[in-house]
Image (cartoon, rainbow, N blue to C red; front, side, top):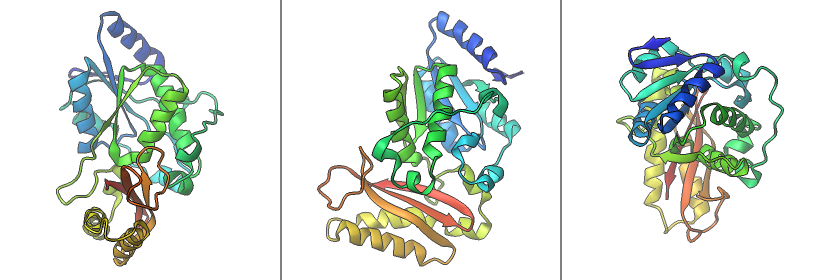
Length: 283
């Protein structure tokens, strides 16, 4: 299927054949994996890919193996037609939107071991999540064989895990992290934002606002005091509930207990009603 200058691929063999031809003509491949419900954050990644690649491939696939909550999988928004319309304004050349059966003709039994990287924060509260991410991203890398792949830093831990996966698999793809894109009120752009009630959307800016204000407490207050302050500030709003807030080293993502522990990052997950939002800030 061709939409203006974009082609939509549903089957792996067709996309691989097309990209084989492109590589044979000396073109570089940039790749942006997504689960659809595209927003400006995704489109920024696609434009960044266009700056560094001759051909930009965007995948739209809601990956079931990375959801440990069936309800979360069911609620995840899906609208390929709207996604395609948005991608028409970007350098995207090919959209790959396979079925679950196409991606997983057989159950993927692979188990990845990311050690300490996957045992904290998202890994602790969403067991199996990063193994599912590694399963689908490794499959997509095998299909697309990109020179570069572009990921948003809102999912800070995910980027670290994918870098570790690339190293483990001796993959040649270069991982390009891109800055978090935010709404005008500071809320990190996320497909899940569309699922928020108006009340919860109104209070969501408190998350980023609190993280930024926490910077002003350093170094007068200890790491533990800053953590307690952030949690209490967010939880003071009855519509928000912190699942975790950790201050970690930016390399191994292990919690720190002093401000002289190198570059530190504050990572937070907050429930706004039933919708789970994540964000982070460099301290």
